[in-house]
Length: 394
Ligand code: GLY
View 1 (tube, rainbow, N blue to C red):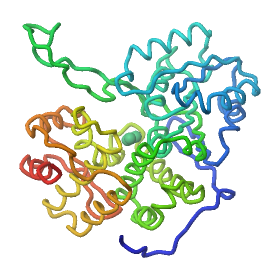
View 2: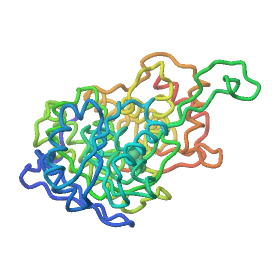
View 3: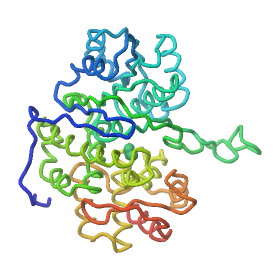
View 4: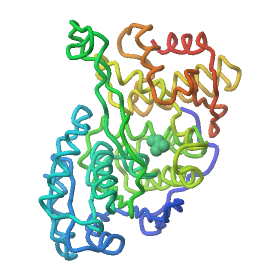
């Protein structure tokens, strides 16, 4: 493990600042505080006042934290409908959004009635898309309960659902007789819809399983790799305390990671410029995730994707081999995979990368680290470099 090069800087829970995202569509606060769940009602009233609202929650999270949120919202004066969904990628679909619309209509939600999304990224994306489109958009409050959603998905206004693309020759497609399941195209339908507020209670991580916690750490590593070498050092030195959910250490990690995400989305809300940097590791990662036989979660696929991106960058001469090795060591120390767990069909892998929506005009565009704390977008990365990077993580 590399030794820290800077003294430890832990933010005390009492002094956590209220962060703000100055989005072009309007500023919104990010409240990060142990116990913040008890303030959901009050914060929603402050940022999205109305007489009715919908709490859209992950069914499992609703069982643990739903009543605290619902009690607070009702105490703040909301006539509340609670809509639970099973948080699975396969259910992040337009049909699930349709079920939310029906609940919203039934509850007579109006243009200014808020949707409060309680749960991880799947809930935030799905309920966020319902909020973005119901009556052309209603206020959205994110209450993320996974580390991944706290540091990434809840900030920046990306909402959306997946699409199952039928394989050529699958039943129902012209000239069919095949029966393949086709490809899951992640987040292919969606909208940018900024929340009115993000309320992060690190105490909710106590009910998150360790595998999910590690998945969130992959996104924190990504943020450090893009913009803050000190964040990587914090993860190197404080990894054990963070994994043990020491509240000071995890709160510090969340604050630093959120600041990076907020700074990037402020510059480029709609991903026409620097926001693309946040896709570091994701083009490889989405291809890995699309191979469902690998049974990897998003954060795990991103961790392997970060390694692949680092290896491609070393091959292109933009990153030192020692920095790529340091990244791999850190990810492994955090309990994340750094290679594919079983062999894959390489042609299928490369094909999946080309289906990713970050393919620009059929050239492979990749975000690569060009140092620790610095990344850049590269157009037209040679196919042989990508193939070699895939071979290295296989
Ligand atoms: N998760 C990448 C982004 O929000 O742009």
